[in-house]
Length: 461
Image: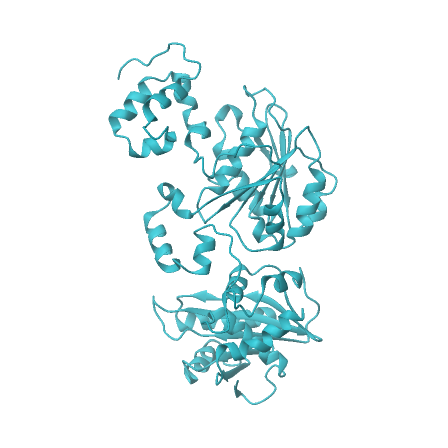
């Protein structure tokens, strides 16, 4: 290999990259150029770099990150929201932005921020994803600037005096008292107590001349996220899962895209799109959000609704399994245990397990497709399971309309967030096919309306 140049370019990497990556349409990102350039061009770039620059190269994210969604936008913003599909590189963007705020020109030099809040849905997720994950702060930091993790204090400490503290969004009061000049909120759309936790975090962002924060999340149409995006002080970037295909298993990307392409769930989870609801939807996100609770009261009755798949094997639909309880006049959606592509023995075991765990009074199972085999499959798992068969004689929309009316009245309350079930509810219109989770929920609520199964063992609705 040729002797690398040690002549005095102010930034040898930048100058070399500019010379080699410039095109008639303007410069590419270094990552984009490397992906398409031949090996000989790679060698020419490396030959121009000093040993010091080569050592720093893996940690210079401004050259590797995608400018369209992983690098901070210009402007005088306070909140940067990174919306992305699963595996699109959101976590890496968050970790690298925190590094950019905390690190100085040398390991001991102060950066822009000194007190950082790291907030995830749970404390464990903050630790495992934001700190110790493959794209977390420890993995992304160069050896001479890697912070020290002190588990007993839930904190990271940098050599320059900066520190970051972990918080669980499930415990909003823990954000009272501490104060910050920087914050990273991960997967905000999953937070069960999102409004409370976000408010407490905003009160704590009061240090320094210009407190800033980043939110990295797969989008979900929730009131809080909409409000953040509508704030004039917010900027947003987005990217689909496909944008990070170089770092994903080809088999994963191909299989997941084939299965979910064009669906509401696929556009949200893979496309990173912020989706609303079907124009003719029987269920509205606003109603679900307004009635959401973090815990339910003592239940009078609990029912597990089951909508079995019509077929078995790799091409089968999901099996909808939804747990609903009733307390007085209100109904509480307690759990979504649905699963896809499962054999009858597997989905039956899941339904029985949910019944036992929630001490349900009934398992209500639709038998239009499987007939008595549905009941027999459940009985094989537990001969004493309190199973009731139901048969559909009306269309799906007609069965769902009474349940939809209860949602509009605020009488159906979701305990926490069940994102996939909620997406399917809001995608179901009066003339459309209802997903299996929606059917399972409708069967459960209907059974609770009519007495939870104290009537004959088989009913038609």
